[in-house]
Length: 138
Ligand SMILES: C[S@@+](CC[C@H](N)C(=O)[O-])C[C@H]1O[C@@H](n2cnc3c(N)ncnc32)[C@H](O)[C@@H]1O
Figure 1 (tube, protein in one colour):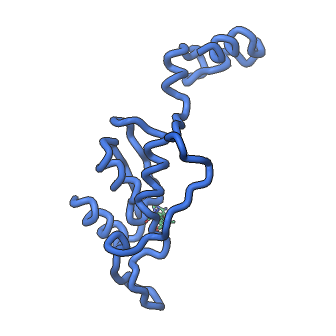
Figure 2 (tube, rainbow, N blue to C red; figure 1 turned 135 degrees about the vertical axis):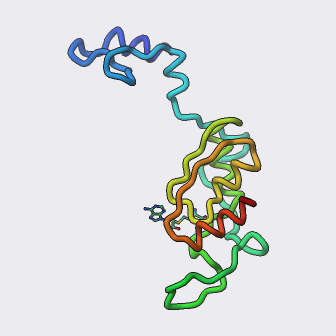
């Protein structure tokens, strides 16, 4: 709040308003707070996050049409839900909307559904998209 007030008061005259969403009106301190990225790490969580690779029932099995080689895992880069959960809990609050543009098996959407966030995801490969929908129960 202090930063936005300071910037709007002391920003270059030709560049004012310094903080604006429409290029005309300065944002208020309250609006600025809403625009800021959230990041709250739980006590004990550092900036190095380790978790085991996906395995067991979490690892989604299946085949993809057109693949030269057969793998039992459907997606070669499926991320662990426990890892994605740290990110989503650190950066969002309940009720926020999370955008997962390169969804794969959409772990972000899964975590959002489990933790009270709204979600939007995209995935271009039909097999991955269908598996993600099934995983979500949708
Ligand atoms: C690294 S993978 C994501 C893996 C995902 N985090 C998971 O755990 O399953 C990136 C995904 O982006 C998808 N992708 C690539 N280009 C895309 C596009 N233009 N629109 C939507 N999805 C796209 C790929 O098919 C791939 O599944």
